[in-house]
Length: 429
Picture 1 (cartoon, rainbow, N blue to C red):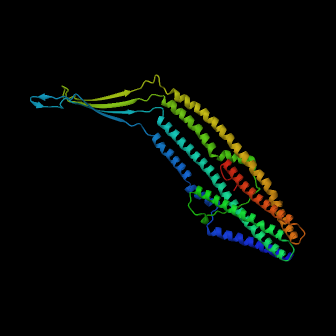
Picture 2 (spheres, rainbow, N blue to C red):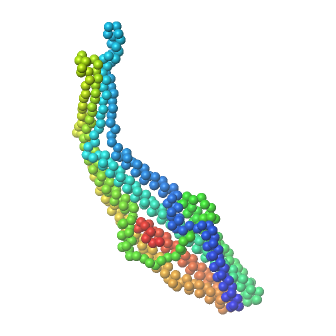
Picture 3 (cartoon, rainbow, N blue to C red):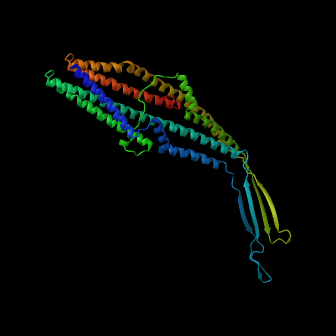
């Protein structure tokens, strides 16, 4: 009987290996995408990201508008037109005065340069905010990618468990025919198979749901049967000190960079408000032709003028004060952003550390123990040295431990993605 059990279990493990190999071949045939490929496709196709990228380009184009000079003004006027008759000859335009007038507003105190500087700083802020949007969207993408890998791993585990259990059913049926167990025990063993079938169907639904979410983020219309992803579903206990990740965040977080850039733009806007409070003169020049002058040699004149607004009441006082206050407001927002950076890094760091602390004993001890207990109790049950309840409990414990390990790996990968989000780059692969 022991040789039969060993042979059956060997066939079971062989079936698992074949099943895994079949899944690998299927994934290869479906051109499974790695994380780098998924990320590249996302950056090239995600409509939300592309729309925000266009917004950055729009901000860039506004720099042209900010640096434009005021348009000159050309005025053409006539005066003195009268119906005239001289010696019986009609001369209706003989006394008309013609006057083209040209004027131009001259902006002082480097207003154009300050507008351009403010516009460029606005473009920098928009670029940093675009990077921050990409940072958050990639975190969402990474989370769904991990969920897909976890769903695949759970499905493979469920399929392997069912194959193993089917071998147990075959051996139990042989024992029943030999009279070693009763009909009730055989029925209980066979009834338990429905749980494995249910777990497989649940895993299939979860896998397909994760793929649907991933395809949505990629804006991809590939069918689920032709779409697959591949990547390591494991954890690493290599971990850097907290201060290292804090410094990474201060160097790389685009939202913090956008906050710092907002301070600089607020300073520039205050300088522009002060400049806008200055007086801008308008210079004008005109040429006049008046054919009705008595002196035929002096019927053409030139003139110049300067128009200076008297800024007695409006010296842009409100904008000067508002922009000065806005500098302090942006400094406070930057302090809040910096505090949020530290909070995000510390929280994500603790989550990763906790997951590593839980996963390490599973990897080093509990997984192997659960496998040994299952195989030992199964062997004892087949020889009549263990009860049916012991056998079922050992099967349940094995599944619980293996499933818990996969869930912890998924939680670790999600927490690692959260830490990458917190520091602004992929610090943990």
